[in-house]
Length: 420
Image (cartoon, rainbow, N blue to C red; front, side):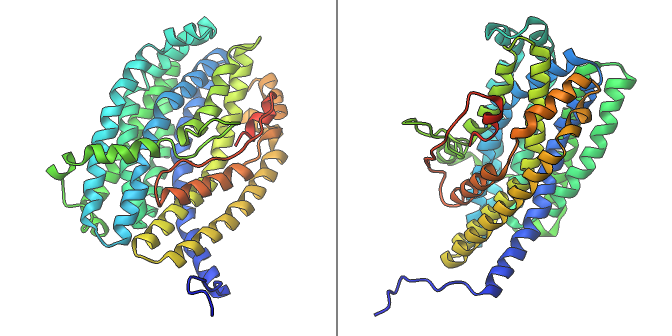
């Protein structure tokens, strides 16, 4: 007798239909993620025109900010992928607004101690034996990033609230308008007003505020959010501890495993990249090494936004299907996104290797920086990391659990790019 638990293989038409759904979601999501990342990259590009020292300082500050702040807030806000995705799939629309408000409270509170750490970044970097001149510039830059920190956390909560509802195009359009605004603000503060690198940091706060305001206005006025957003509620203050039990492991979602160490997750994967930028400041030529390493990782993250969009699409599709009680469709979505992720990773890797000689000039006019960048970026290959992100996005739909992966690392910089 046939096993009653056996699941029939999906028909070709079902696979194509699922693939179309995921591409329609992933394309605007990837564009939105890319545009949000471009804001920080544009700031680095403006600073790069000021010289090698400002570029190294801003790069070091950006890496420190990612390690200690942005990765933490992104991970905590990503708990909404699980909560809002399943609530929307189960047609419990009123819960989405409550979850968003809880996330805003938790993320806002978490930003306070981070801001205190940022205020003393210069001293902290010197204590870690970074070059004093670079550390002083990094400390000034990151202090000007503090307003952007608080706005970034709230922005992530709004984005994660809209994604599970399949509302992705407005996020993309808002991010696109913000990028255009950011270029103008950077030019005004850096070039016109002569604020230098600090002006580029302050521009992040202006752009985040504009993006946050646009999404908040959309949520308030759009008919697509009338069932999920009913205004602020006291219910958000209840169950914060329960929310924290999900938010904390969400910040540790994408796990890293080496030998017998347990995985600490999404923040740790982010940290492993950014820490290499920090460590480059200990090398014999810290200005060159820090600048080049930052360029390589900014380029890597720039390319990683596309598989990240696929991961978000997988999270939306799987969480919606699980919330609606359709595990077979959730399984199909999982298989389809893994195929798409591998194909995308191979394509991106080829483009990045073929265009390596041009990357350095996009960030700086220094020929030495450009040549060294072309040598270092040969190790950029997002295929394996992109597939890992899809797996973590899928796991995120069920529960932010710890998962173990084996990895091999190399002491060379090129080996570090394939760390996951």
